[in-house]
Structure formats: C-alpha cells, structure tokens
Image 1 (cartoon, chains in turn yellow, cyan):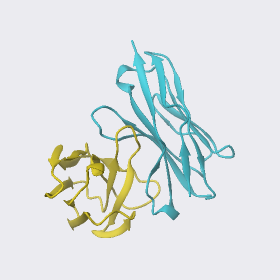
Image 2: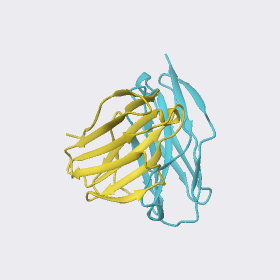
Image 3: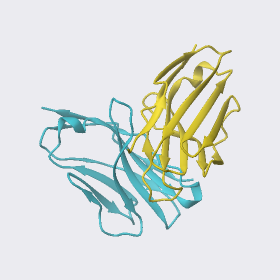
Image 4: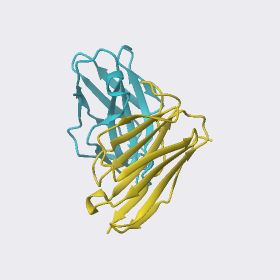
Length: 114
Length: 115
C-alpha cells in the first residue's frame, strides 16, 4: 500500500465555520507534511511533523491548526478562514525527514471558502 | 534562500518524440537533492526522478533521464518516446538539510502531448 488518502476531496465552508481535513497513510512513514497549492502555482509547505511532533511551521496563520494524533494520521483544523485561503491542500508522507526519501502525496482536498 | 527556476511555462511534444524541460537553481549549499515531480489533472504529485548533488552520474528511470550540470546549477529532464499519459504539470524541486528537508518547488512547466 503506497497510498496517502485525503478526505474530503472537496470542501466548501463559510468564513465562520470550523472544519477539518484528514490525511491517512499506512506505509509506516514517520514524517508527514501539509502543503497549500493555489491554482497554477507550485505547492507551498505549511507544516512538517516528524515522529508525531511538529518540527516545521512555515509561519502559517493560527486559523490553520495541525494535529498528528498517531503515526498514521494527520489532521488540519480550519477555523475562521478567509476567501484567499481557498486552494488545494496536499498531504504528503515520507519514511523520515531526509534529503533522499521519496515524499508520497495524496490527491488533495479542494477547499473553497465563501 | 534557495530558488528554483523553470523558464518554460508550457511545452508541447508529439507522441513518440523527445522533449527536454529545463530547471536551474540557486544555492550556496554543497549537499542537496533535486527532484522532478509530475502533477496530472488528477492532482496527485508523483515522483518522476531524483538526483543527489554529490553523484556525478545522471539519474535515469526508464524513459526519463536528467542532465545534471552542477557547476551550472542546471537540472533538466528529458522525456523520451513521449506518451499521451505524460501530459501533466512538471515541477522541479530542491531539498537540503538547512531547509528542514522541505521540498522547494519551481513554478512548473505544463507539458502537452499531441497525437
């Protein structure tokens, strides 16, 4: 199983809503990542978890709150988002954080904030 | 800060032909890793090929190969015998220890494959 599963695939939320994105992998990977990708742009790193601990936060606004409850699961909690937060949110995982290891990506959640 | 530049926003190739996508990068690091990722309309990023900076031999994966010119900081991707399924956005990416091993992507090249 070389799959990273993200749910939901699409999400529409209002600016006052609270929602969560979920990412799951069963490859035994101990590094997990959240990226944000705007249309026709490259992915931008948001957060990195290593062994279930947050190791990198790329100065992301606090309305995005990551959580890694176990080694297989990564959540991104969303609250009071702005329309400019509409984007494709990609989750990825790799064996460990190192230069060579392949990062496996999910298909993403297409988020629209209205 | 490291930058990755892909100067070709769009490229087109006929089926069975060969195409080369260019990528240059700017870094002061000596130890780093370079990648090409493919993102088809399905949105999933897929690793195409990778190269370690200290290896002089160019990486090859079936129809995909790279031309790594370390002194010129160039990392181009050659796709041979192009297939319709190769149509996608291709991102060049850079990774180093000093960035926490985060992938730093170029802006991408959209590849169209025509029959």
